[in-house]
Image 1 (cartoon, rainbow, N blue to C red):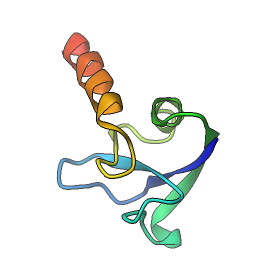
Image 2 (tube, rainbow, N blue to C red):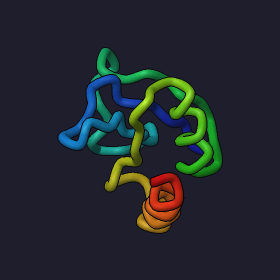
Image 3 (cartoon, one colour):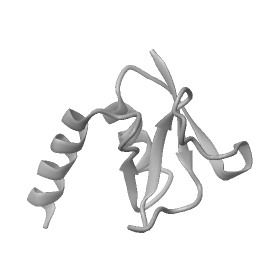
Image 4 (tube, one colour):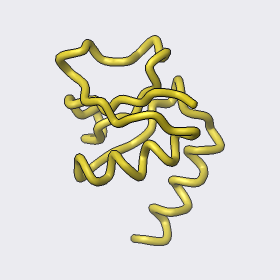
Length: 78
């Protein structure tokens, strides 16, 4: 189980990124919100969507497999 945080500052795409606690790109403590302990980035992302409107996954600490799943979900919405 990992501990996840949500950046309170959006990235260049306007998304608030989900990071695990060990990520080298995790924002400073004042620039992030605690999401909680989850088994996967996808579980943390689901919770993050209840906290912010535009969310995404950190490309560094969340796997490319997770990004592929999110892309497929976004394609179905649009």
